[in-house]
Length: 459
Image (cartoon, rainbow, N blue to C red; front, side, top):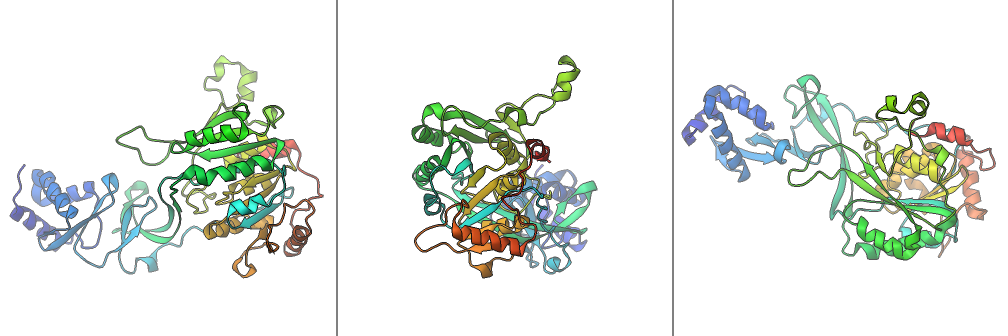
């Protein structure tokens, strides 16, 4: 149905006069259409088309400047210049924030660091460029290496923390149709762009091969963008016969693509240091239910079946207690499965793209000793807060910048401290950590049994 500009102007003026359309507040398509149907009836669809066209060029309609923020289903339309302050929502799309909203917003949920178990491993955190740091570690000193490097998405990876509060004029609709106003608390981000990704990755994978024990394994976590190139590179470094599995971590969360099949999986390449004799604790694998338990009998149904190389596991819940706010945090359950099956209590683990420190919590919580490396200050902040119950030993960090329970060990000039295998400076750091925290783990204490470690898997 055709609609004249004068007809649209009259309708908008009526909505503004009746305070149905408020400057500075964002309206979604469905809500805006409902408002327009009041004065315009069947012409509301044509009116919305004009509003959308005007918003694309920030034109004036009935004396109101029209603008749009977001895209597709998340797009919201704003009228006038009532001091709306642009801010990003949890999904990265723009939201509005009127002056004073921050004063009344609910405080953000504070991340509460989990309590460390009594029978736990040790954690070391090295802050700095990972290549020179891991190059200083001795040969064959780790039993499992897991790395989750940048995926080379060619964009900035960011995670915005928000708080919401009930507000009849809020910018989003929640449970039972109630409206909430969103306030941005802060953003953590890092650039994920490399001109030559393999040139960046290759020397680090070569070091990983050198550092693994003969029974050790490397797990490289990537996605569809670079995994095929990385597999060819690992074939050259480890040998094709040392490739064991490509694990697919599949999940079902978030927006859907409209021009291709929605990508909802990551790839984890498993390479063993040697083709025979690698660690694989089959009996420790967590079991999953049969889809048709009546067909396999009571005994099998009660025991469950082992997973395949495709692991269905949800992402870290945006509102869950596990969430630290780090942009690329991986689920604890996925890492616990890797640690339990591919290492033993007392083994040494390494992650030199540590990020939020998930391997540290998974490994130390299951009685392994873990070394974490990262150069991102935000990663260091997240890790020290998340893992402070383990009293991690920190290398290369100014003590004044550490606000958590941790021992700080400064690296020696021209070299990085070796892992805790008798190195004097590291032993002094461990002693300092015990003075700070009476619950710091004594490496001489008994390790948890396999049954105890298995019971913690996927808690």
